[in-house]
Length: 315
Image (cartoon, one colour):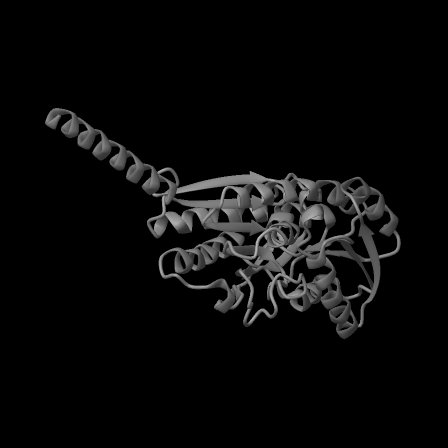
């Protein structure tokens, strides 16, 4: 009988250890990352976030599991991915770009959500205010100096009269920036023509419709246009129309120039917020939306040469 009791006790101990081990594994930090679409700016924000976590000691596959999902620009995919992260009971979710952030925020009010590459979280109804979210959402904004970007048009084309403002009509972040661009155009004495697209297939056609009507084109940090920049600049550059962009990735894809933020550094800044939540126990509701203060001038010299545009020395 004593032998049987001893075996039972040993078995119970093994089962207890196994249960404890499983419980420990279940508590491993899980971070879900949803990215709206692939293009240089969002890719850099993602990489900056992962590198920032690593620098803080959170290494994928070691003490944290990162589940990266790309929605390929489809809102229905955003919803499916959001459902997956919620069902997985992730420790934290990072949403890259406004539509991705809105999809996740609509699915959970308890899991901490950080956003990045979202121009104005308040307008997107992700937070009650950018200074004090009061929701489970915080993060970083990619709001760029729109007025300074519009002023570049007059600096490179002093005789410019009319600007084409291209944007995706379904992206709240783009509409917000275009409103700022309109005010900036008025301040610079520039007329403007709107060129909105509702899907990627319209980019080339809408750009073509601006040829002969505008002296330059302005494109904000618009995800659809960033992903389809090749189609836009193919028409604009052939027509000798300079394109002033919202961010550096668009310039690298053939746009002329921008005065914008560094998305890699934006991602790293968001990672620092993640550490504050995971390590220090901070609540996103009390964490203000953060911004990058430093902006850089980026010029595509190949495009400038093709357009015959001389970039002033004082830039």
